Length: 552
Image (cartoon, rainbow, N blue to C red; front, side):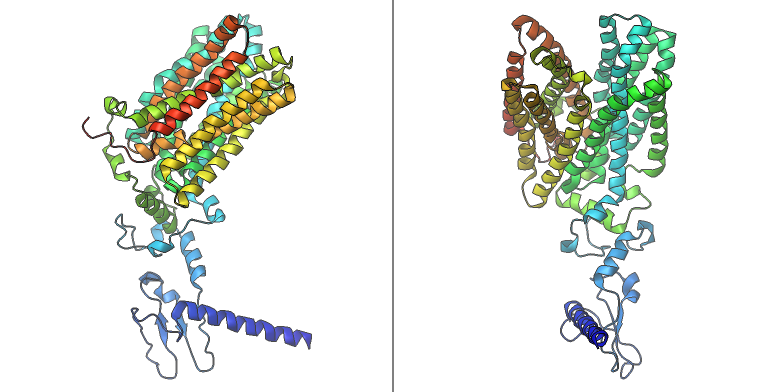
């Protein structure tokens, strides 16, 4: 009896559900809207009627999938539900479709313009654009791991070769010599050739220099320095290439999240390099990490060239839905994607430097690099002098700040994209994120200065490093927005300023402490510079397109 009652309830529920679906899709009488054509089968009278879906609901090639038949014996419309059809459509590869995506949005869409909604989490994670940004994150992780491995190997190398501390410093700083040379030129190449090719060349060169470092160290000091300089030159194109690929593959409402994912790889690369390199050295010698990281770089290049395209339009496996979502979202936010075709090999540097938004980006990058490198370079010395704690022996100092930056950087990107989707202007969103990225570390450094115990001071230090990652959703995304066709060279110019600021800051700390006899004054100075940079950014930054090709 209970089983029979359960079956009756299930049947009633099924009838009710199908009735609701029928009413929602075909109206009260079960017929298409008046504006839609109705075709009837030859056996119209007793055999039933056939109602293809209206052309605005599905394309012609799918009209056969949805034929609803009604008979006297079975009045329910048995067919595919609209959501099921749409989910199936989104998974189909692009080349299977006969209709094409037009840039003017006139035709070729499976979904009405107002129904092209943001993807679900599962659709986002499994999309082709996330595969691209995951590869970018791996490249940036290798970039930072190859960079920091020398800081781990320099101690045993110095002992084995009999290097002085001053020469060890020259070996480590030789990376910055090359890094100063390439960002502007590399950024111009990115704008002209695209991020895919330039990133592949960059990873190949820096992996080669990392792989050959053991040979160079055994050959001569000049060969070793040349490999370090080559490493810096090659890595100078990494961030401009990343920004270029993100701007092409992601709609504006997802750019911050994409940059957050890529920069999470960048930060985790430091943690991986610092934590794994000593273990590899114990197993395979001093030069083991150089060989292993170099080989991983070569493998990355093979996967990148075979599985990635410069733009989503060139990708063979991208779904129609994802391609429409990217292109329509970019067009709805007035991104000047067509201007990219007009990029020149020699950018108009004079015009770029004549606009205040450019200087807002340069000052923001310089301040971010100043605080970032000052904190991570001199805080171990600060804790040793003030609290008599050796942070280099603490595992958390090697990993926690980087992990905190990775987590908060992605969180900032998610919040930034959410604000833009909810109607907050891009300019205001970038100012909010960058204000947190500057004011947050400024307050944290003041707290660090006033801390009385190493545990409290370490908490303030971690907060300062973590909050600085909000800058990834501030100035780091802004290059794409103000100048999509000069993203690379703008990023290169600001990176050069950031490198100079990092050198000036790390060297300046030593002279300041030697002159003043205390770290506290320099921490207050850095905090003040953070606040002034936030004021400059909020005054001159914009999220709108800036025409750098117009006459001065």
